[in-house]
Amino acid sequence: METQCGEAKLKRERTQEAISYAMEGRWDEAIAANRSIIEIAPNDINAFNRLGKALTEKGQYEEAIDAYNHAISIDPK
Image (cartoon, rainbow, N blue to C red):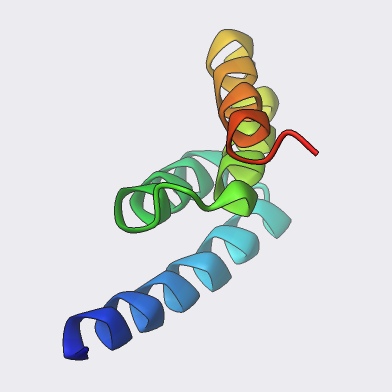
């Protein structure tokens, strides 16, 4: 149980970081933050969407498409 609480807290912190980095246009940091979220929460659709946006901003279109497609595969609705 303690590990789950720690992971949830880490996920919240990294999510706030990822959003802040994106709002500041710090795309490399946003990419890293979202990837770290995905490591601990591999089904986080929002992290994949944010990752796709950040990669798009960096011109890394193929990787962005992969991130968006992964989000869709998690929840195709």
